[in-house]
Image 1 (cartoon, rainbow, N blue to C red):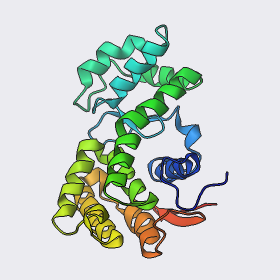
Image 2: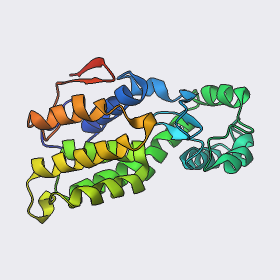
Image 3: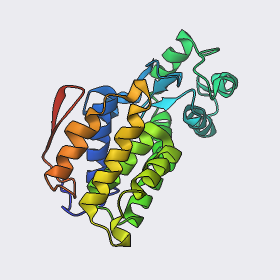
Length: 237
């Protein structure tokens, strides 16, 4: 796919690169389209983590996803779990969401409507607001990805907290600041936030990926990209 060098992250080619980067960090593969069926408890206090960006039963986005999917396909096999998803929201509990739920999730991934619902929820809750805010701050595709990746891990509100922490040390380009200085401050704040939680304390997705691109001056996130996450090496051409 031909991608304009200076395109924003919402360019289809750049967005695919973003999804590969997230998938490398979340699922140790660049093949993000193989992750619609993914589901497991990674023991981070958020219950089940599932799908292309890690929708969680304990944080509300899995519930919102299944509600949206049910609006598209009311007879889907996951609809029966809506009461349980509402019950466990905000907790690490699996009550009502045991082995059959995992099997039904994996089976639902074969439904184009479920895959579409995952992509739509990703865009609504994470990608679109993160990229919008990054563009407003005057950063290019790398910075837009940094905002998006922060939203994926910490939620949109967590992204806003990280941005607020960065503002204590640097100024975004839209306000006259230097883009590289701003992104270094943003990534510093992101690392600080990750170190607050044991499940996220491996900061290699910053140290050996995003910070590498920044140090190389690749502010447009142009390929090829060579990077490492959790010790695994990847290349996106």
